Length: 476
Image (cartoon, rainbow, N blue to C red):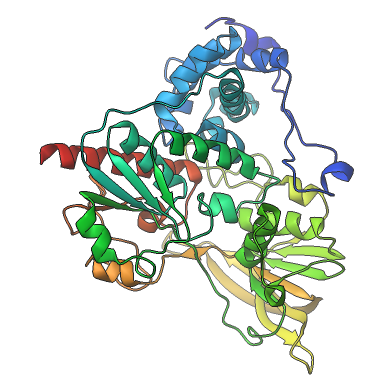
């Protein structure tokens, strides 16, 4: 602990966002960075607690106090060495992780000024790339091969770990490029795709083979995969959006959130999108249904496309600001989150359920009927109970984006052919201790097992699967 009194005299300083008038016109990352001096000063605020709750709260067990101290002392190489032991891709988590560590920082719990752990992590990662601390390694091969199906954060982590352990790893990706929802779900203004490309190039240099546009079960049979490789790791994610099957659902202008987000990311990547499928928010009244991060991403994307107005509604109650007594630590705090996208222009409303979509004679969406709801605690202490109030109104809308979360992937050829213990719209069943499925050499990880979650939790699951695969193959 280089400066034992820094937390008493130095306040939290965030890098903040680029000015709204500047960032609203492009899809470049909105978050700024501090200069190296200010960044080191922020790292000095770490108290090196006797029991580091930040480490306890991190799904991948990052050793925050250790690398904060190295960063404060200007020892970037040492800081990165400690960081990379637990985090395979700090350049991702340093940008898009909700920082569970910061929610448990003692300075958060005591004075609501946690250490800027996430920003510091990104700073270390970028310095490591810039200074050449990150170089391709040449693993010693052990003669065994592993297939990873899916290249989201879970699949990439499993592939990276197994490759470094000496296995020949092939990653099968159904989309045009690797990255999963980080590539085609998260907007560029939160995670520039050049950051993903940089990491994929490094992984390829280290020997990992990526087979894009290859859907197992369609382009290549699951039987071929199962018989060609010594082990298989399924990391297909959880990309089936939750639908809203109400009156007017088939009207023109009602879309899933990922239709908008995926299209925009593909266009920025130079991937052609069929003209008849293009969604353009320019001059349109946009309604986003769902108050989470995906909904926020739709808000930012709609504004950048030139929407006339953007409204976001949420069926739950408006959460309190800063502190919620209903979710005390160590629970994740359910508090009001205002994203960079919300700052750029958005009407936000809560406690509204959607009754029906309203269209014109040509089948084009024109409005949405919503109704106020009230929430009351359940008598048995379970989930709160919702009651409709009868107070309805019509929100004018030319486009609606459904951002209500995701469900488990439908049973498909891959799952059926590998005879996994899974049924339609259910998670892939695994042994929680090993992430192994009913088939001895088939493992699964990430959202396909746990349901939609965080990038950092998917990475933790991928690491666990890689360790189990390594242990299994070594036992053979």
